[in-house]
Length: 480
Image (cartoon, rainbow, N blue to C red; front, side, top):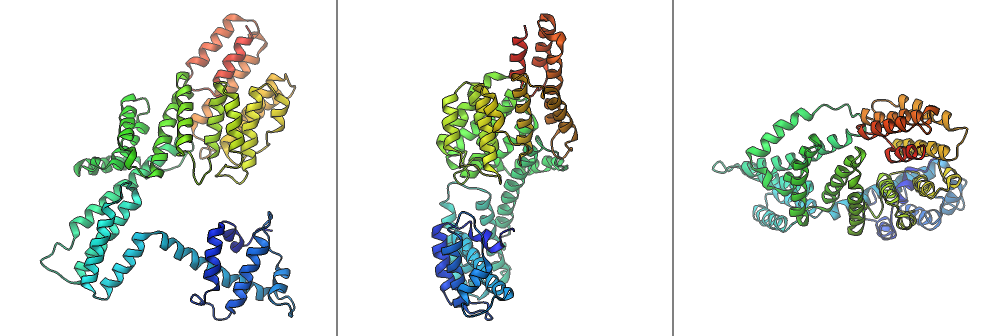
């Protein structure tokens, strides 16, 4: 049975949050539900905290909980449901207040809005000057900073309009300027995501032509003087013209120049674009960048900029393992995997991610049976599914398994059945080429046929992209 909404939320709270929530629920200041005794609600929360959240398997025995609350009464599910509902409302209220408490600008704006609505003009002016002064002290400016700038200017505009100062510009100029900057930063971020994600899956979005208008706005207002805008602008040029080294070098120069003033999440995203640029070069056969990309991964691991809440994304783990293995850094890769076994995010099955990458390590160590044992039949991530199927094919090849040809056919069918929204054509092509070249390699005519082997090696090297290119070339060399 799925866990209740209440338990799903409480399971995400750390001990500090639970202690704060305990004080909040026990307080009588937030008793919105007059139909339920607040003491019973607090007792129920204490029961969950001390008996349910401490278990590995977080689940609630409703009858047992009811007896704890009402030892003299017979179980009535609806009555317990009312208590749960009342506690959930308090949890929602707590989350809202905690979120507001963490946003100093929103707290200040709430006070400023109160001053404006109640005609406290001198207090309004004093508080808004103070808030603008605090904003000027911020060094790392992200889109939320620019949004707050707009909200502050808009609040001042509301004040000027409310007081009907006919000789005033109503703060319109500053409000429009702050809105434009927020709009440009946000739009650039979305376009960057659109172009990046569009390399992996078919998004069905066709808004890129609007970039010309956005670029004109940026140039007309000299917004390229704003570091965040200048870097996003340059990334989009890189994504639009990936073969232009000049765009990429300019992007790297801007990143090096402004990294100290970039918000951490934006810095992480920009570093990912640098890595992805090298990864695309490698995928096109430029293997000289393998050392560079692994160096970057190690550097960003040390800097902590690969992590999100202390964890790594499955694709990051796979890339680190893959390129570490290609450079034969087996000990380092093993240590990395063990260190991050319980630090995997973005999936409901982190153990599958760990064991897939462990299987890859075992494959490189020629422990084929062990590698096969660690592969799952299905992965949550479609690209892990594709990689695992290719790995299984490589294992069957090395073991000279009778299952090899049926596995190749199955993989080819799997790729052909993936919809256009699941993978882009480039991903389909590189995997189809893998199947095609592997079938040619397995053709009896290839064995000890130097001319045919040379021809296949040349075709693989000259192909725009082939999955498992290094492995295929290695197997062809073994057939000479």
